[in-house]
Image (cartoon, rainbow over all chains, first blue to last red; front, side, top):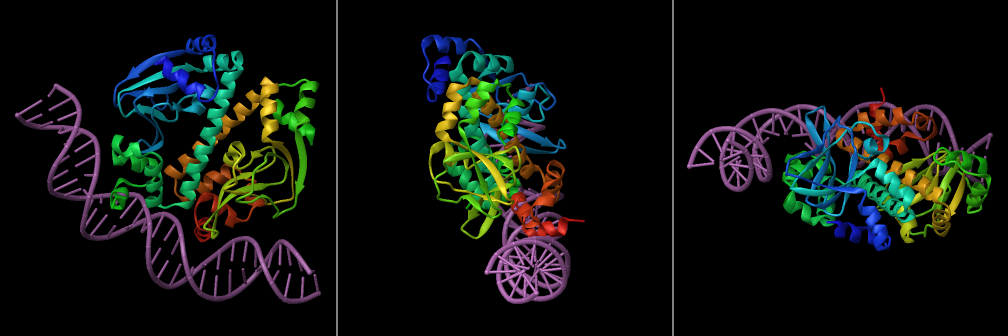
Length: 187
Length: 187
DNA sequence: TTAAAATTGTGATGTTTGTCACGCAATCAC
DNA sequence: GTGATTGCGTGACAAACATCACAATTTTAA
């Protein structure tokens, strides 16, 4: 579990054994079952989560009727309600498991300690944050330029594994179309 | 001009005079006229830009027919085609001035030097990148949860000054609706 | 100053997408 | 196993939005 984390971080910055031991000491492991909520709207968000195995969705519930999926998080991804996490406020979105999931948890205080104590980790998180920002902009572009069918094709091209792992109803919630419309697209 | 940059950075991290002198030495000032392109699709993207005064738009031209605005950048904002900038590849979007604009330019090499030479600057950029990521996610949420009218109202509430500074055709391009639909919304 | 370009509104019409309703198969929980 | 829930497709209809066309006004550039 920790070894996977080391591999993940070393795609960006190389670490000594001591450095990694220091890093690993700031994480705690947790496991959740399918359908379980890691946090819900209104909860305080104590951790950022690194997904060791399993699958998560970050979702916003509009007037407690419709569910909108802001992002899926698969193995190797970082996820949280980052606004609530960084500002220590209450979650506006819920983080829920779509499969049995193992995560490594990083408290905000430990995130800051890691950044302050190890320049490499601040660089690592900067790299991740830049990549996240760029990916979000690409998704915005796909809303601006593409219709439902095109967005669906882009999603399948980018994350072909998702189709096997999540029901189409949820893909529709991610794409911003009704499940009926998505259903009529598939041919 | 440099003083404004110092104020901007010191909202996040406090600096000594020496530190700021070191920082300022990595930027170069440039000025552009209204309608002028800072870069176009296909250009190499050498700089990230901090807007001292004026207004920019980052836009994607779909099949050289329709224009889609990924973001506006007003005073105090950082802007670039960050994917092209960070990966040293060609721009897929164009950065154009909507008003006469003064910017401070930061080459990628100097960005890395700043991050490596001054821990505070890496922390500053990390803070900015996190904020940018969160803001992009909010915009994605607005596409998922809101119709054209609601997105327009959210935009005006968040950036009331924009309405006075850019034509509605461009607001429509930012919101992802036709200018005709936006026009019919305004009452 | 004056012609060209940009901006905005609005009518008519077509397309895309959402909503409601129903049925059926697969999966889950006890 | 069995009843309940979930997932998925599809028809009928309504709403949202895009497109095309035209006109009027304002802004821009030589």
